[in-house]
Amino acid sequence: MARGAPEDLARYADMLSAMGTEPRLRIMRLLLSAHPDGLVVGEIQGELGITGSTLSHHLEKLKNEDLVGIRREGTFLRYSANTESLQELLTFLYAECCTRNKAVKPETFVRLCK
Image (cartoon, rainbow, N blue to C red):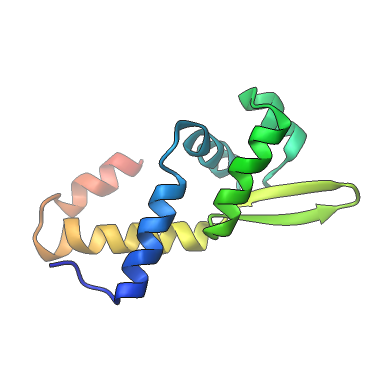
């Protein structure tokens, strides 16, 4: 049985759901590759070829789940991955798969991340 308060489980499920589309997962990977500076909307758009209104919709969904942060720079909005929220999510998953029941050996997980 998964540990964690019910509200934590709901939050993590919402975070996974927000990243559960191909465009949003691509956005998250791109923002992680630009960490810690992040990217302005035009850079994300140019890199991924997503139209402005569609990109805005995806970024809003990620922002609502606290997966991305936003900084205003003059007339631009700079988005960055919220690595603290992602670390919480990964810690939650790691606790079950790699420590409690050893479904995945911890050293395998570390090797995958390198």
